[in-house]
Image 1 (tube, helix red, strand yellow):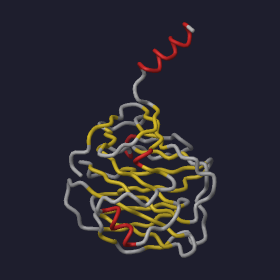
Image 2 (cartoon, one colour):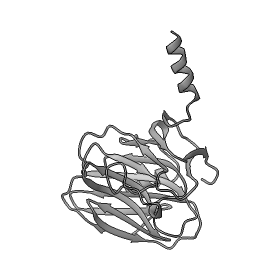
Image 3 (cartoon, helix red, strand yellow):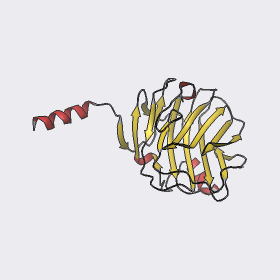
Image 4 (cartoon, one colour):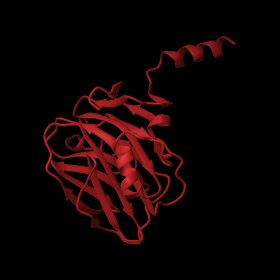
Length: 223
């Protein structure tokens, strides 16, 4: 009994390193350049992806390149969202890259959605509800299952291999991921704040995550 009470006390005293919770009106803050600080997003994705849609909000004062969303499987860099510079966004599928461009103010809070369809290879970005020019890559490809999904760093190996020059500094919130293509109308619903579309991979209202290093949860004040 004494051991049980001791473990309860230890767990209660730990920082919020691993949790599942509703993060409505909250953001993850990445306060510094680092090769270690990051967030693991945990999902039971046991089948390969033929389609996906990812939406999130981001606010950063960085003008250099940084990783926004890194998805790796064992031995493969499968899916990466990278901001190369102001107004330039790249999607990597299986190490193949397409880039979309938009005129944007800096610094400013952004709502970003991107999706990809295996059957056509078409990839799309929306920034603050505006669709950017479509691109095509990896037609017929399947994005592998059982991933490591990381925010704040780009994975060069499965769950690691971080480079501080590619790390993210800023705030990320309202992240949702589906294993399907949302329609343009549904993208607009998400942009306008309607999150009733039942995310199938990652849901900000019931997010499983693990915080590593200096990552902080704070109220969303800019959305």
